[in-house]
Amino acid sequence: MTMKVPSRISLSVPRALPRPQPQQIRPFHQSIPRTANVAPIVGTGPPPEPPTPAVRNATERLERRRKHAELLKTAKEIRSAQEGKANPGAARRFWKEVSVREVDGALQVHLDARPLRHPHTKEIIRVPLSKPNLASALALEWDILTSAQQATKQHLIPLTSLVCRALDIIDDDAAPSIPESAKIRSGIAQTVLRYLDTDSLLCWAPPAGPHDRRNDAGEDLRHVQKKAAQETVSFLTTHVWPGITIEPVLDGHSIMPKQQAEGVREVVQGWVMGLDAWEIAGLERAVLAGKSFVAAARVVAEWSEGPVGTGRVVQAGHFGAEDASEATGLEVAWQAEQWGEVEDTHDVNQEDVIRQLGSVVLLVSGTGKQPY
Image (tube, rainbow, N blue to C red; front, side, top):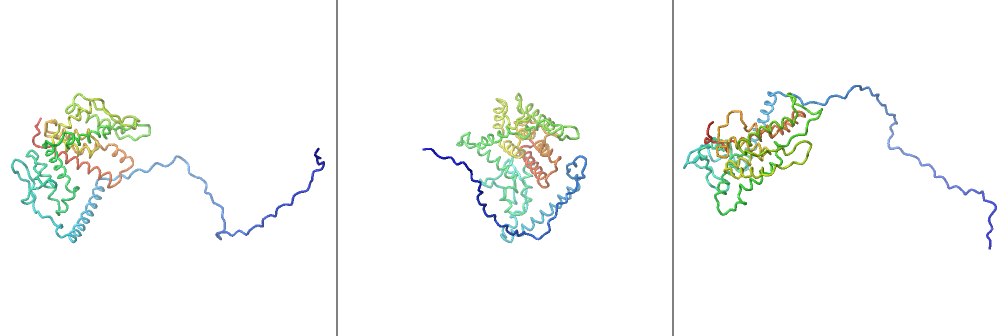
């Protein structure tokens, strides 16, 4: 059966769909539309210089700190008055005078007739006779307290806490039942040696580029850091750890610190374990304050009266608390000079580091150091 093909194509057009009726548009506002008036670009030449921090003289800074001290004093008086109303017994201290006395071959701080005691063991705090400056500073710390309640706040008696830490190490070393690995000094050695791999004095900036900042002497940050580190490392490898080499842990463009050579860590660990209780307590405080094991070791070695130190009287201008604080905070100070410091942050932190390092000097120094 064949299918017939149509010979004519239909030209009829299908009926178009009805067009939608336009709807009335309701504007959201009645303001008259205006075209944008674009101002012509008239600026020529290079871009402006970046803002520079305002230069402040020492008088202005001292005046600002004096005002802050007055405000803090007023706030302290108000707080003391409020505490006195809430607890009349804590409004005043129970002692009138603080003195240092020699009792049974040791120095003791007395609050009137009561000797100062350890807050946990209740034992009398005894300072060696060779540390009169430490005993006097301890007495001064308690003399400036205005109430007995302040004595329970650790941040108000930091030197007392440091002395008690050293006394705890002495008692812990004398306890025969405690294994060597569980002693306090073993934990301190393990903690401070971690900072040797990330020492703030051994982390140097990358080589300076053409646009990096330089000081008045033409030195970049890396050169300043390297010079400060070499001075301290040279002292330690000459007087404290002879025969070893201390390398920078962060150098060039590397972002991962490297460990010291084989054998260096063992020598340093043996030195730490050989410190007496006063020295190792001071080393712990100095390392945590400056984040630098190398700088802390130099502070302890130069100022200690024990056999682990240099055994000599430190002359004026040697490595003190301010020098150690400056060496460990070189990068922060460099950035603050370039971009400006944050008020009541950078300066307060630097003063706090100096205070903590100064307490270490008081703790380890004494009259037992022999002159040149």
